[in-house]
Amino acid sequence: MPQRRRFIGLSVLGSVAVFAGLGLRPPGDSVAAARTGSELPSDVCLVAPTFSYDTTSGLPLNAAREVPPDARCPVCGMFPARQRRWAAQVIFDNGDVQYLDSPLSLFLYLQRVPRYTVGQSAARILASYVTDLDTGAWIPAGQAWYVHGSGQMGPMRSGNLPAFATLDQARAFAAREGGEWLTATRLRQGLPASLQRLAPHAH
Image (cartoon, rainbow, N blue to C red; front, side, top):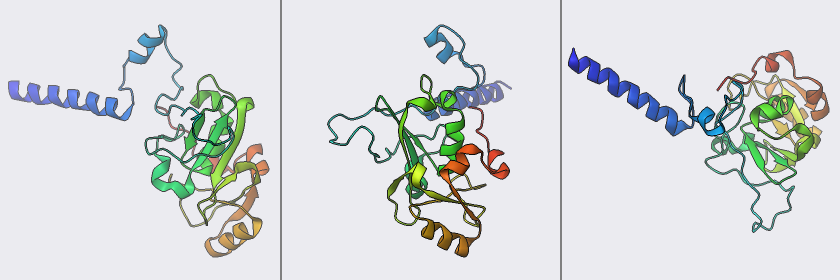
């Protein structure tokens, strides 16, 4: 019996260590609340901090940046650098950047910016980019063409919105993989129901 208790105790400690290593809070953890002196809203994302603008980079403030290996998507918690050809990013007017794992996560993010990036709002977004699935190049999210309903799954595995720089690319992809092409304006008005159901998880 004492050995079993010791095993259970070590398991609990191991779980806490895993949560801490991932940047997640185990149930009942009050460390973040203690730091701020008050309870944080339950829907605030705590696992995906923004990255500051590097003034020595030589890049304009609104230019797309390469995804750091340790960047986390604020919507799903995944690492965008691991599937770079799906990655997206949002740059705020203070130079901070938030990286996302896919165009789908980008559009889910834009619906509730303050939830995922505390202290920011959609009005303060200076630029946003998605990756051209064919070339891997960054393209302005508002100018890209997206395909919904194809047979190719993105990082979230249960839905996708691959992005392309031109309508011809989107049409060719849809002809091969199925689906319909959509503009950023259409997606900002409202995601298709099947994608909207992939709403953000609770952290």
